[in-house]
Amino acid sequence: MNTFVNQITLRNFSLLFLPFFFCLLSNAQEKETEEKTSTNHEVRLDVFHLIVLPGIDVSYEHLIDNLSSWGVTGFLNFDNAFSEGYRYEQFEISPYYRLYYGRKNTHNSGFFVQPFLSLTSGEYYHYEVYNTDHLSTNISYNSEKDFFGMAGGAVIGRKWVNEKRYTFEIHAGIGRYFVFESNGNAYHQDTAYPRINFAIGRRF
Image (tube, one colour):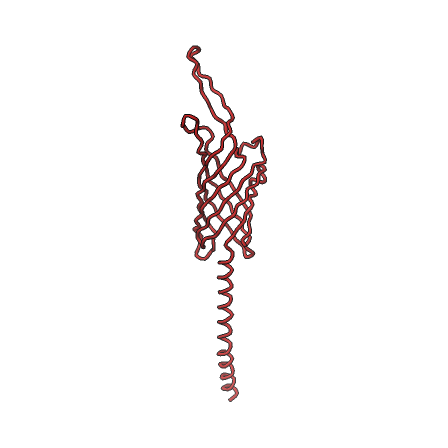
């Protein structure tokens, strides 16, 4: 008799507990979904440029969905003499579009590709050759020239996001200046440049 009563009591308790459990599970899923959709902004500081140049490289990223985003990067070079020989831009503004290829429901993390365009200003070295007919020799020299114009390229990289919405990413790629001589011919010396980055960010 007691066994039968205990079985009925346990069954009734289970019937009362199951709706409560499913309610908690549903609220947790709704909270997780709400958190994912509400954190669609990210700001990052590039540590690589800060150490190597030094220079400030700050990025803003707007998360469109779990697999894509758009953003803009601003770069300011404090190495006015360009002594490091890594980047010869004084400043750069780069809008970009990013596609993620991470696992399902990773919410803008994992492997990504990113094409970009840039409005930039700085210096570069131009190699010139002159032919002197009366000496039958060629004279060549390098000269520094200022430029202001467009650049473009692409990077590939990977991003990690922790539970507190702090992010860490690394990427590498290449860009090219779209700079032209007065006669319309593109410069051929030092018009390509590398893009290397590792940055720490925060989503909000």
